[in-house]
Image (cartoon, rainbow, N blue to C red; front, side, top):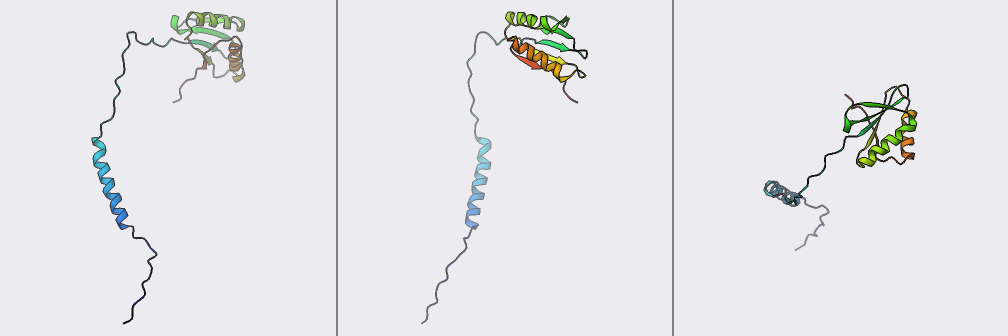
Length: 137
């Protein structure tokens, strides 16, 4: 009796792997909504955090004149020169170190004028400087 030679299989049957993956997928989909999320019990403190301080606004107008508006004390604008500006801001920040400074440049003023004001304030060790912009439509 003649025996037939066995041929080697050179392909992998992936159907059992797909079946296992589908069963795992169903198990995870069923158990995921049942999992409880961890919650953290935070300690309480006696004193609440201080509300943020209203910023100082340095207004650079189209003619490059400067005005200072302290929103913490109202909306009144104070016309200042470039030499007086840093002194007023440092005095306000000494009274409240958390008070920030926002530079509001007119749309028609040169970008260089706004940067000069920012540079002048940084040279005078004024901290917390930012630019005020109007949100788009």
